[in-house]
Image (cartoon, rainbow, N blue to C red; front, side, top):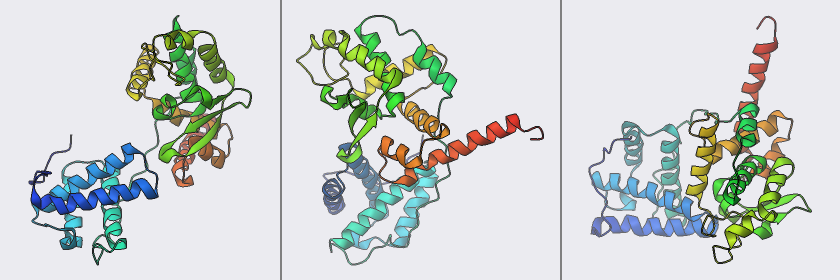
Length: 315
């Protein structure tokens, strides 16, 4: 766990903190309107900025217009000392840079002390992905009988078969499923809508759950939720419940610490290894920037290298 090294505890009732907090709320509201960022993303930005403000107040910096480049460099060093991962430091510095850029653009301050601050280099970290054999063992295992077992089977098939995030899975309504067109309508980050193909065992499992009586049985216990995936009370499933179900299914076949995002990574990796176009994968995953999807080219290169080492007589 990172150690807390700053000495100022941010108190919302403290007059010294108010200028920072008000500007932060304005900035977060701006992100919500201009970018359509989700509530979770906005909450993360606000949390990162509160940490930054606490550090500044601990250094005696009492207003955004008093922040210097040296203060921001010191904050970055403090994050390193607290033991945060490079990805977390990069995210927090990015939030700081965006905040100061917003202040200048809205003419709330005259200068941007973060303008010449570079984001720390993030080391390449390949996403965790299961092998095809592991995926087959996971999805072909006996899930048992009853509506919840059939639901769990369908959820795992969709997570891998369509590459969905857990939040996107639980957000699916029955009207989002178009079996005739072979697609699922998904509402992703920033309320961006996309259509993802569904076929094979994912389609079979979803049809069996949605129209084979299991979903109807769960729905009878609730108030007619439109959600595809329902809990034992007939209400929409939560992301936390999906995480538990995925982890339990993984443990049953010897895969420790399995989480829904690993199935999404596996989907992208196996699609790329199977010859799918990177732009098509970007579209299916709902990435707004191709650079986010390009991490899977590194995974593919690693796969190619493994094949080379296994097959080449002098490797």
